[in-house]
Length: 197
Image (cartoon, rainbow, N blue to C red; front, side, top):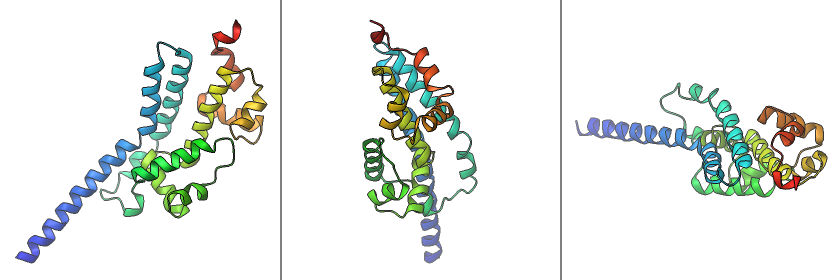
């Protein structure tokens, strides 16, 4: 009787811990979108162009989140390898990515920063952010490109290189995929009024 009670208690605690973990993962998968939306709200009155840019990126990310997360909820108990990154790992990898946007970012380099194998890191990253590391990096590159386009008159080829894209064609293709229009069209539509003076 005592042993059965201990087994039951252990299963109950495991179930509670797993549901708590699932709730945390669901919440953390939208951390990036929340960051963009909070930023947009803060700058809305002073810089609506940049605020709209942040909203557009957040919408793009939300579209990608709605396709896959439901598939992951089929099993009530997610295996240990499907758990997300620890807070220190999340901070370390996002800092690394943001600092290396102008160069090649390899999955194995991100994984080594947080002391995980490449495959484990890829699963943990997706569980944490709700998207792949590659998609996250592309969105961060696009955000940097938008900032450069709004704050300078640099040609698109220079913006592409500064944001880590292989060339202007690669940059244009990714930009259209994330934002929904070409960089040139986006730049004309959201031209910084300061540049007109």
